[in-house]
Image (cartoon, rainbow, N blue to C red; front, side, top):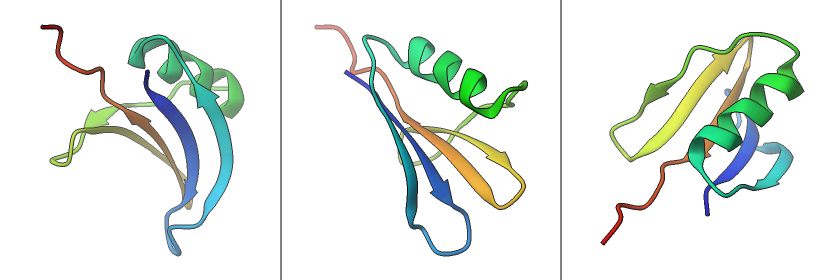
Length: 67
């Protein structure tokens, strides 16, 4: 289950824990509602979905591969 968090881009501090979601897509949608706007997502090299907004970063764990 992917987790969504809002992180301070400068300090790395967790500003808000948005919780756990069934899928990464649901978590990214929840982040968009929290931001009250459209977020542009990119998959980072360490396997996290990230979207930057001002000095904050929304971060969502990627879905685990199905076996």
